[in-house]
Structures are given as structure tokens and as C-alpha cells.
Image: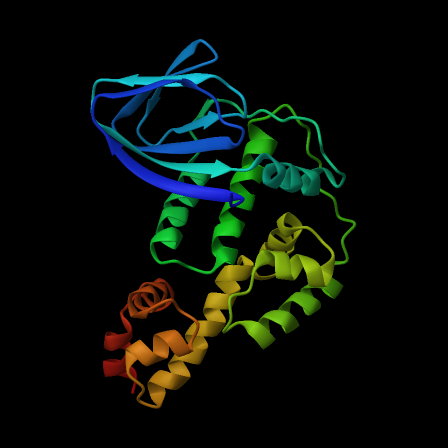
Length: 258
């Protein structure tokens, strides 16, 4: 099984019998509301709220109305690795998150995840979001006390990261690749990148890909070729990312710029 699986579903008059998972199940309600019982505690999770089922928690759903959700299953060891990076030491004890929360940042990260899976984006985008979701849950919605560390030599590691990204930004860079070349955790890679550039590693990569695409557009290449040659999944993926940067489509940009 993968370290994580994302599913989207719509339901009408739902009944899930009592069951358990060995993984973490984190879901955002995107329409309606969900009546769920977790370890005999009944909860009504409303639109835009987050429902969390920890490993081995017995739960079931009985709903007689229409509702939908985005649900993320994350393997325990994957979560524990992220928690270990937050604690700066190996964490093997079980961790439990609150079963029901309302958090705007996590909600937005779920929206991005859904978009990334739809466009089959690079794995680094998905890993970044999952890492940030688990970090927020650990800091705000668990009993663990997290203290940020400043022991990392940020200047040294940023140079290594930037040099590597400049060399390989047209390829599918993974967070694991960045962890391997620096020896620091995925969480801290995201953190120091945000400190230096106010961007995640993937956002930095997209900026470089857009710049590469502009050079090809200036030479008159078709957008379908520009997209693939610049590291995007397809033309629609490229157009969406381009609009985020310039506020207009590549077609409109060509008309007013070249």
C-alpha cells in the first residue's frame, strides 16, 4: 500500500458498519454533514469541518441525508516520521489527534490536495501538503508539545537545495530527494524554504518552470509542447499554474507581450 491515498465521494442515506483502520483517516466534509460515531462518541461533522479517525478507533456512519467528502488515508509510519522530524528525535509511541476540528489552513490544504491529485501533479506537491497537515495536527490538535529548533544551518542547506532544484526542476523532484541530499527532514525543508522565499519547494519549482515556459512561448512553440517541455502534466495544468502567477491565461499573455 502507498503511504497515502486520497478519495472523493458523494453519499445519500449512508450506513457504514462499525469498523477500524490501521491507518489515519482524515476527511474534510465538502457538502452537507456527516453523522459519525467514534469509540461510542456521536459527532455531527458539518460542511468544511475536518473529521479524524485515529488508528484502531472503532467508528461507523449513519446518515440519511446527502453529503460528500475528501478523505485522506495516511499510513501510521508515514505520520510517525513527520512527527519525529517535529520532535527532532525518533517517535514510536502512538499519537492521537482530535476527532473533529475546524481549521481554515488544513481545509485549504485539502482543497489543494484535491486539485493536485486531479492534475496528477508531482509527488512533491502532495508530500508537502500532507507534511503540513500532519504538522498542524500535531502542534494544535494533539497532546504533544512541539518546540521549534534553530539548530539547522539554513544558509548551507538552502544553497544545496536551490542548486539541486535548478539542476532538476524540469523533472519529478520528490521531497525524499531533497531530504537525501541535505540530511534534514521534509518538514524542516519546507520550513526553511518558507523562511527564505515565502514559498514551498514546489512553489519555487513552479516559478522556475513558468520562466522556462515563457522562453519557449517567446520562440513560438505551441502551448501543448510548452507545457510538457516545461515539466507540467499537460496543457490545462500549465494554464492553471500560469494564471496563479500572472492572473491571465498564456493565450492572453502572448497577445499582449509578444
